[in-house]
Structures are given as structure tokens and as C-alpha cells.
Amino acid sequence: MNRELQYKMEQVRELLPSRFPLHAPLALVHSFGCQQNVADGEKLKGLLAGMGFGFTEDTANADLILYNTCAVREHAEDRVFGNVGALKKKKEQNPSVILGVCGCMVQQPQVAEKMKKSYPYVDLIFGTHVAHQLPDMLLSLLQEGRRTLNLDDSDNTIHEELPVRREAGAKAYLPIMVGCNNFCSYCIVPYVRGRERSRRPQDVLEEAKRLIDEGYKEITLLGQNVNSYGRGLSEKCDFPSLLEQLADLPGDFLLRFMTSHPKDASRRLIDVMAGSEKIERHLHLPVQSGNDRVLAAMNRHYTIGQYRDLVGYAKKTIPDLTLSTDIITGFPGETYEEFLDTLHLVEEVGYDMVYSFIYSRRSGTKAAEMDDPVPYETKVVWQRQLLKAVRDISERNNRARVGRTFRILVEGAGRTPGTLSGRTSGGIVAQGPGTEDSIGQFKQFKAEGATSWCLTGTIE
Ligand code: 5AD
Ligand code: SF4
Image (cartoon, rainbow, N blue to C red):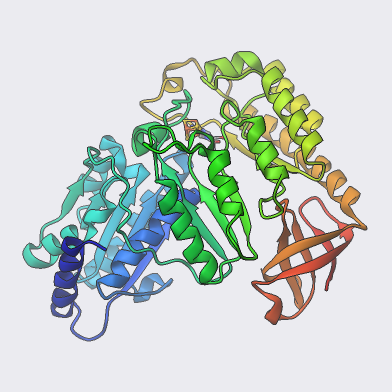
């Protein structure tokens, strides 16, 4: 960690007892949205731990509450406004409590302004580029009682010096890049997270080695578009090469990664996956729509023909591959016939998992300016039709897995008492009787039954 950061954290640590004289303060950091956000939350927790905070999950006990927000859909934003509103009473009862809202949602200036004006009891409002300045923000608050509103997005460096506090367990997130350059017409991410920046391969490899040494069994590499990893780095390294180097590290672990943009996912990526048992047998390849006109309006830069070719190659090269995708229903101007193209693609590919979202208008994006004549209720009906098809497909796929044996990582308790839940390398949920000492371990699993969302069987 660099000296300056350490010094500031030390200053905060010394000032905290004057605000919280009775006990060491507890922080609650809640990350909404995607895994990248969870990983950012782990950095915020790392900083807070270094400044002397303990942690709690209980709002009632928390002395500092930080909501790390998501902006991808309106629904996620509404939840944050609701949660922040509910904190007003807490602040009235106990003015020492420190409240903060950070991340993608408040990186939008109009949202930050609303937060500042309508929620005057929120002390810290900051965007996605300045998390490393949390110690400065706390210092201003503790020394001068000053609120922070910091949306500065000029800092495009990746702060390797930040400490990370991960949840205990077998699974760790490892961000390899941040930002997005794609500007899909519906998406707010490029506006709130800025341009793509990749971490140096040696930094990623070092961190992966540490995680493996610490006993993590599953490492998920994160980026908005992992397949464009390495662009702009001085040393030449693309995503398949990085994946290959990571898979060559000694130890018993599984590598997962997300998200892959179909326009950049290459056959070499699939060859690298096929070449190592340490890489998941799963490809999450968000298609968004099964219709070329809609894909062009979404600015996705691939056609269904190209997508089909890639999926065909992946299935042929990795026969037990699990495929999942993201789909937006009701993109502005999408017709029912165009939606049916998506439905047919879903049936043709036979995805095991589909994350489906009803289009949400994000102000500032290109799609927000497009005509959107289909009523929301109709989009809900389309989505239901899609989800019904997906359930049938996943059940059919899972039934075909019955009788086979899989290596699973046991993650925790299963749905019914006395059972455990884990995942296959393909990401399929596997449940069966077992005892807690297997949690966090790789085990053999024999599939004996199937539903649309899991396999049931015996854990050996
Ligand atoms: N409306 C609905 N879904 C969206 N996504 C991104 N932006 C929007 C939006 N405005 C979905 C995409 C993406 C996933 C993470 O969220 O499907 O792949
Ligand atoms: Fe959004 Fe497209 Fe970037 Fe994904 S690739 S974060 S959908 S702009």
C-alpha cells in the first residue's frame, strides 16, 4: 500500500474514537447489481477495515452505512432511493452515524444532485472513479463536518494499492479490467464506468497466486467485456493468453469469467477453455436479441449468423459446455415477430440459463431517444413466454445429465435440511445429502434427478 494512503487511513483511525467513543465502529457496505460492484465493495471494505471499522450486516448496529449502487436498470435505482429514505430516522436518532451512497447510480450527475438535495442527511456521495479517496472523504467529515459530493471521473488509473476484504469462503472475484467502450445503445455502463482499462497481466497473476495460496477454490475473472482485455496495455496479452497463464498456475482451483461480448469472443478463447480442466465448462455469451435489426439498433456489432457460428464451434469443441445468456425484452421498437426470433434462437441454442430483463430506459443513452410504442404490460407478457420456454429447455437439459458424474465445488447448505448445494464446472446447481465439512471442497457428484434449476443426487 502506498505511504500517503496509509497515512490518511491512520489519521481516520485516530479520529474515529471522538465520533464513536463507546465502541469500535461497525460498517455495513451493501453492493447492489453486478459482480464488478461486489468486487468494488470489497475494496471499500478493505479501506474501511484498514481505518479501524469492524463489519455488520445489520442496519440497526451499523455506525457507517455505505450503499454501493447500480444504474443498469431503473428498478435497481428505485430500491436504493427507498433504502436511503428509510435511513432518515436512523440519522435523526443518532446523528453520529455516517451515511454514504456511491457507485454507478450516483455517477450520473442528475442522480447525485437529487441525492444531495433531497437526502441532506447523506454524508458521502461519490462515483465510480474515486473509491480510493474514501479516507480523504472521511477526514473532511470527521475534522470539519463536511459532506462530500465527488463525481470526478478524470482518474483513469487502476488503483492496485487498495486493500481488498473478501468474504470468507471458497469463491473469490478477481477484476481484470474496468470500464466499457462498447456503447450498446440501451446501456448506461460506459457513461458511469468510463473507458476500458486493463490491469497488467503480472498484477492479475500475482493476485491469483495469492488467492490460490489463501485457499480459494474458485476464482471469477471480472470485466464488462473480458474479451477485449489487454487493449492499451504496453505488454501484449489478450484474454485467451491471460486465461491460459492463469490456468497454468499450480493448485486445485477453477477459473470462471464474465462477461464475454460475442463480437470479441474468439475461437482461440474456446480452444483455450477446451485445453484446461481448470477453466469452467461454461460460457456466458449475452446475445440480447435474436433479431439482426434489433441487434443493429442495439449497436451490438454482430449478426445472429456470426453468433450461431461461434456457439456452434463452442459446442463442437467443448461437448459438455453449458451456455447462458442475457436477453432484453421490449427494446424500443421491437415487434412481436422480432421477439419471436429471440425465442427461436433460445430454443435453437438450448441455453441452460437465461437472464432476462425488460428494457429499462436509461436517460443519456441512444435508445432513450428511440420510439418505444409497446406498452410495458405487453413486454411483461413476452418475458413470461420467454421464461416459460427457458424453464422447459433447462429441465430437458438437466434430465439429459441424469446418470452422469460431475466434479462440483460444494458451496453451502441446500434447499432441504441435511442437503448441500454446489455447482458443476458448467455452473449447474447440484444438490444432495452431505455434511458441513464438505463445504468449500471439490467433491464427486452423481446426478440422479433433475429439475429446471438443479440436479439432485449423491455427493461422494
Ligand atoms: N434495460 C434492460 N436491461 C439492460 N441491461 C443493460 N442495460 C439494460 C437496460 N437499459 C442488461 C443487459 C446486460 C445485463 C447486464 O443487463 O442484458 O447484458
Ligand atoms: Fe453495457 Fe454493452 Fe458495455 Fe455490456 S458491453 S456494459 S451491455 S455497453
